[in-house]
Length: 576
Image 1 (tube, rainbow, N blue to C red):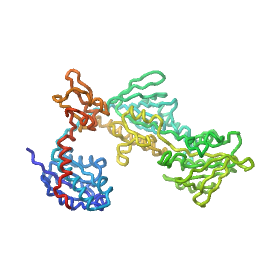
Image 2 (cartoon, rainbow, N blue to C red):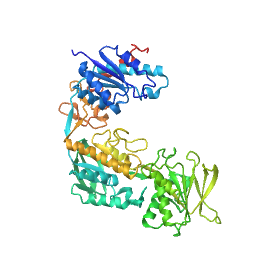
Image 3 (cartoon, rainbow, N blue to C red):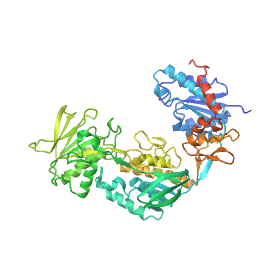
């Protein structure tokens, strides 16, 4: 029987962990556990010196199992697995204990936090004793890619892929390419023509030999796995069977309906309009009221539906800068008109944007601040002899007074919210939504364009509100990830999958009903369930539901899980 030789490493994470956990004491206690050959603490285990320490110790001390006690495995588990591989050890002989998010960041008693950290590390050490070596598995990559969404994000991604000589299927549900940018006159902060940015992209896509564009097209469902997807799409009553290796979802977002906020009287007062309606007027070069006359007093209200617990708590990001852009355009188009910016906070982040705010403030624009947490501004029809058509009542924070702003036209800077068909697309391609119904990335910092479904990437505003440069950056990042996999020709797939013991399987098919990845089928001849290990993500749902225990998850066996629990509840060395 193989001798277990375990190395344990406790990370300080600077002060993130060490301020609340006595990492030195944890390492010293863990060193006394059975099979632990070496136990060390180090300030930054994820750093190059930290990884080199692990590699060196594996070779010098003949370690065959490693435990790192640090941050979330979602952040650095792959980092440490690669360190094991660099030392010639199978990467699955590794276990990670999270003592940052699960201990240091959620406790305020150092002694209790240290005891909890010790328990988690003991559980990890107990578990790693039962780890088994798993072999890598890979599949071939179909170089074609499906891009869902024909806005500036989808167009940019499609061109990046197609210019590298790869087939792209660009699917757009409407009859036109361009998305929301097609409705914009000028972009901020440079006040450049949006059409000059967008039209060349559309022309290149429409005339690219490697891009097939499908307008007025919907997707019912995508089948397969990374490298080998297929789908039937419906366009103009016709159906097309497509096969592709990767997917980029770039479905964009949709504007908030301000009619939900009664105090703004949208669609009740004729000259209360949305930012999109003003954009259309500016693009047509005709900013007029409903009666055809020029407005003499225009008020622009920020955060309509954004940063409000009753609607959307998040910031829509582009509203402030768009409002400043409108002031510049209106000042040029209507030089005699009074302009009011009624804002909650001015968020002018981005290259050149703070300067844009400063220059706009010098163009005879009145900036007034309302309390986002208090009563929202109320728009009412003015008295006949008031000299203006509408009055906007609110508490002005800078002066500390209740005021009424006169207006002939009110522009509502509406929030950006998730696409109305986000759920349908998410179901079709097998990805998840956050609480605001934007698509969830694999990791918000380290993997912002990938999803938990291998081969499916998200880019642009379908992931959350953002401006054009950020959307294009994500499009190119997603395309780069795909191009890298195409260049390799193959991609590694999950090996911690479920496996069926056919001798125990009773053929009840419960596993098939509960599998969220449709990775299990039924062999009628053998009367047993069969796992497609490429589709399987190792979530464990089938194993927990199986009445006979016929399915087990590799790397999460009963023996491994129970040993970890035993370690957690062990009283050994609990006093620190």
